[in-house]
Length: 117
Image (cartoon, rainbow, N blue to C red; front, side, top):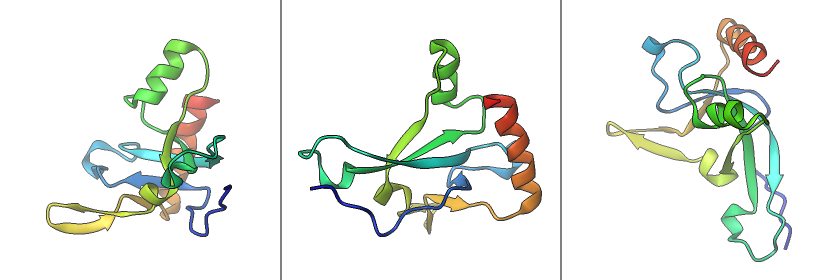
């Protein structure tokens, strides 16, 4: 059964919880570009809707793969996993945090243009 999610992240820029500001604004930075739906009815329900996002740092595996393959590649993650909380160093925080600082967003837009045109 095709299920439309009630909770999903908006199209924007996000930091993964592993982001370290000391390594620059691009460290573990991502742009959400859409949602995808599994094409098979018998997939696990938690895998039926996926966040489609791309890295904004050149060390990321999907970006390196796109260079090697010569075609665009993206990251995919189930919506529930993308929006869940994780525990890091005893602190509970979002797995992905929306970036709201306009200065950082402007810098990531430049990175996006450099990496993806």
